[in-house]
Image (cartoon, rainbow, N blue to C red; front, side, top):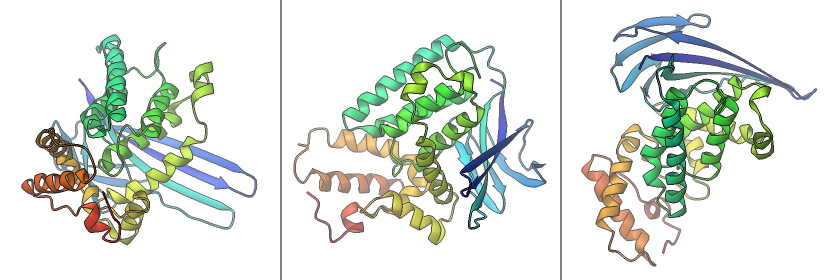
Length: 314
């Protein structure tokens, strides 16, 4: 599989006085990356590779260090706004790996796997076990991003965006448990909208897709790009708290350490509590067991009742 590093620059401007919205995008493709590589793109923006292996790449960009999983992650930087009374502008960079040429991939089998993964994720959601969707959602995005053809009779960018819209809208994954995975879905959704053309839409897509859903996704992109960038800072913490609704959520859940272990933790907790009755008071047993499982892995987590001492949980 010939996987290459891709960079997208997305520029958007809005003129509210006349209701105009303009979007431009340009893309760069980088090959032969090694540890220590330094390269420039788009008006001499410099990116330095700290390390790279088959699983991930660590790099610095605009004085921030990022870790990018090569299989499933689509990583975006914060937007830079230049507001004025009527006009606002934003620019962001999106980084991801994908296969350059998928001619040797059997898309028929991958297409069936997409359907199977969707069905499994829906079942897990309906049963209240969305933690089981973490590896499934990673695989789902990997197939769309790496293994599906750019355009053929069965799939195109508009259809990809529709898949992503369903998964996000139907809560197949949790933004508070896996913010990087959630961000990847949001960023890939927006990339698909940039790639799409009018001929990609059939009657079903025109009927079922929410043409305004990009506004919701843009809100997540803005917040998550600050949350996952490393040291969160005051603005990133405000973004994180806004995702939790009325309840505060421990910021440790926004860390890479949390996201690296949360699936294994939930799996361990599920096994330990399989014989427990899921009645009143179960949440406290679940949180204590989860906290202990996280502590074994070096992650100190504050439970919801500790983060919200004035709230009664049963």
